[in-house]
Image: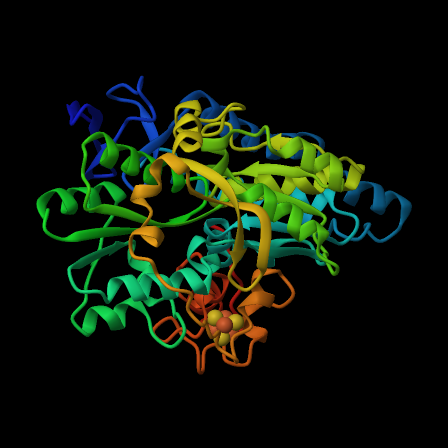
Length: 94
Length: 371
Ligand code: SF4
């Protein structure tokens, strides 16, 4: 990505997975080369926060980890009680 | 592209789906506001992976679909005038007005051009000082700042042969209108992430409190949507109704303040009719007094036109979540993306087009999967 001025407006080349596009950076005046951004109709509107992206993905990974650690509560409880699993939980068995 | 593949990971998707199933004990109906989210949901069959009774209602968040017929007819009128270069995003060319569309005007010799950005239209105006260049400014809070900047630049650079035909719409008043409609079934909202990238989240807590609905700011990839649904059903099951941000990587609380400042300089709020839905108070933006000279409706004095909506099309009911697209009799027969009867069949964000593209191909044996 490169950044330049054009008619007093900040413009930059943005790489969309290999396709380069000229984008207006006026709404993200402190965006720097190397950062990721959300682009809409030729305008950068918000920077993409890598740290938050990583945190979300880590959280989703954890969801499964818990389940693996403690097993399937519903299934276990139902089995012990000799009953059907509560509705809506049939699919949780991994 | 960074963080696109990661947020489509089928293994993580399965974990989220499992977690949703483990959370839900009752039927719930929630609306995804944004057409981009509708596209992802239908494309990946996310709605079919949810527990029985959990229903996704598709919202009116497709800018092409809700642009009022009257504005389309005004666009057609302006585009057919001699000396005019009419610039638009590609999707708008096929949207049926009363009897014709921009594509037809183009094939009949009108100078209708597809642009990628409003700045392209401004450049065309600079290069053609003897022509009147009009840009069709439609869309939500995401497209409004680019269009505002373009008008601001036209004024600053003194480009007098440029004008904007404006029909911008705002999400929060639409949420109010949906909640206040008599047969509303919506119990929660997935709010449109990109709109919030610009506007922040401050408009939503009063809505969540007033209508007692959870509102979860949600992104566009399959995992974003599943995470949004998980947070929503968690709130519903607990009887909570707060605003949560499940799209932190792109949405900050305050949004983009530079864009908001430009919006309030260039635009002012106005009542706006939404195609298929009707008038929603304070739901639109038009150019403010200081930019009136750049308003195509004034410049071309487009007279009041008699509009005529297709009698067959039920897109109004689709847009309000009363019917699903395939329940319309014309779906896939009289009405297809190549020959759309209604605006919801035009853009890939329109619910009818999304169902046509992805659902039509499915047979009962084919189980959809995420990823
Ligand atoms: S399928 Fe076509 S005619 Fe039917 S509601 Fe959708 S756009 Fe209208």
